[in-house]
Image (tube, rainbow, N blue to C red; front, side, top):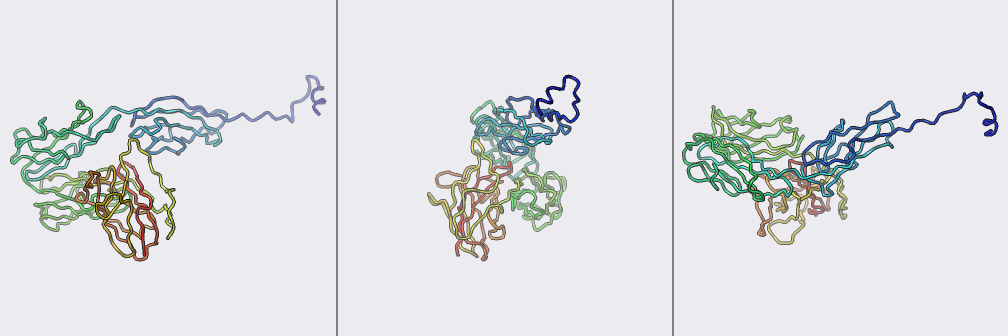
Length: 427
């Protein structure tokens, strides 16, 4: 057949022959780039030899990326993570939707952004006789956490402008200062040229907000009732959540109750809470909403040893800012796990890096087996050795499955740490 085909001279017909199909190809631009933390880079993908030119974007094999390696939109806009990944580089991939076996990639080097200091709340009113807790978030190449506090450029402040502790707790002076509002500044201990500031307006004595209960919830967990504690409350007092008034119940001069709708809690973050009475607004406190995690995806086998393979997305942050190190009933050295019988309650002392107000605690397995009462500010402490710690109350159902459980902690920026097999449920 080959000979006959070759012997037909130049006049043979081409009917019946089939040209090979064009191969689908993808190219990405740019293919090598450096992106600072929290910055963006637009990628473009060109698909050839296909009517469908759409692509799906991945970062390190994860569709759309995540908080650890950075995220990428459907249009190819890549946003670097808050911290540099441990490897220092990530791979952005465009996969052809016409032929999912065809793709192209780009190499992205994540670089550290400039060191910054942010003080929260950035603006607040502080009534005479109240206090205001400020917090400083330091980010940059080394991610140091230590800061030096000043009020109106005076180290630790003084009796005329108010004082501030090493932990950022500000106390106003006895009278409204001549220079008002005052400026609260946090200076990085790693680079004294870097600082962040907040404005505190000192107002005449009015309602004071001292604490919230709870102080944290999980994204999408639905409506909740928040207890607001303080002084000089009245029936005219209203709770402001993120600056907006919410339905408030007057319980007494030191207690208010407020209902937060599910819509208030759909997005993770840190939200200010204050009390308004007439035109006067109290000092503020923080309420935290953490990213949702699916602890029930962790399999617990009653009576058996639990696998180290935890079925959740656990970001690997570098440097590590959230890490559970151990759990005990009190403050003993070297204790890394506890046993709690069915039908009983216990106060657990959890120790680890980044254990601070705004962290949320979960026990793996069936959510109805173990009820966790989220800690309030006064539950946070430290061990004898100086490690951050928190006391967390749990209640174990009488019908809870026997065996080991994992303890998980997460925070508003999406970090997760797991202490595998740290809780053992016994008969």
